[in-house]
Length: 435
Image: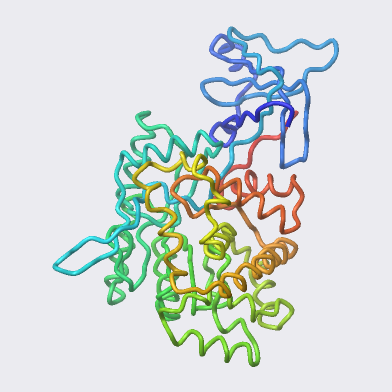
């Protein structure tokens, strides 16, 4: 682009339905931004000589300066010097309030924790906003920490993206500040009510749950007026979609039920070792996208309008865990608080601690097939959006856009997923159209 890209916060300042007379009376409180190139991904428009009229922090008018036409009269005018202006980006998978993964002792036993701290959260919120992400969804996290972020932001104390969120994941593996696993239906109901009281919009169902637990989770969430988001493994995406799960996350639909023939049997043998994480790539070796199970899955996802964020960056992080310095050079990691930056690469390398050079070679060969899955879903009309599975968007968001483009999408299509696609994913109003 000819000049730096200015990401105007359209995602946070959607057009209000304002009467013309109210615009006139409050004109002295308005700010006119002009001499900009407006980018509207939803309509694939690029308008030179564009302008935006902002009143009380909200965009109320926009347009293109025509010959023999004057700009709206305002007390304050800001010349953007032909910078680009587009809707704010939306990260639909951002764990904004999470802390670094570490082990703590509790009752004499080691326990994984992801508890955050307000200092880290505020740093990541500002760095994420600085890279153009103005709206985010946290598909799992400590409900009290997310509620505190929203409260502080509403009071004008903290700067960062607008945030909606799910709560603790429902998962047998204990994670301090991250997971819960109620033992019976009444306990599930009580936990869901507790999370709802802290403002969650979704209940997060995780990989260790069985079919009965996933079924109960969807039912109880719906009874509580909440939606469900799921990261699944042995439980099939098809099973979850038939139940009415609202969102699925990660390009890891690793259920053996989606495989056929000898491939299924080989894969099931591999999965008998719970410590073997090679399934992260081997499932893609074995899957046939044209098989009946996969075709039924894709058609069901499209019919049910199941919203998905595939976080292609996660697959790449695992497959290239020993080459992260090249993909994410240290200078770009300023978006992480120093406490997070120190152990980030080691955390990403943990699942592949015992992989051989050949394992990494085979894994890396699967990335195009992961991207093919993305394109198949997109072409089938399955609603997709852009997410990072990080605590700060920055270079991970950019990389997700690049991987989406490499999967076969046009630049406009990628930007649509990042803006209006994200708005639909979160059931927000889409950005305004240019007049």
